[in-house]
Length: 150
Image (tube, rainbow, N blue to C red):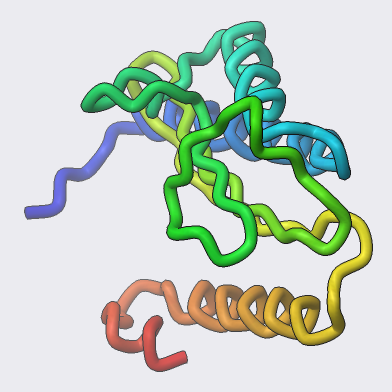
């Protein structure tokens, strides 16, 4: 069943999505060689809270962090820690959900750290292009299959 949201609810969702996007933008700038995944996590929590939001994942079914941080070929939803330092040639996926007044914004980004191998950059480019082709198909009247086909 699809539950339609009111304009008031949609505005809270928009605010949560903007906070998530703004936090990810800051994390992208911070993600450099030598930075730990725990430092990224701590920054994200402070940023979200200082901008009136809540980190949605922290405490969810006992999850201990604000972000999920996976380096290179790690399975998604890696738990940040002080021992995982980023280095040149890595890629990191940062998954983040923040909430505003109980409404959530969820997004993820995968970024290169320093100079990465050409085939890694190609993978990042092609997957991003695929994402946008799918988004182009997310229109009224289309089905989920139209998105996945694209």
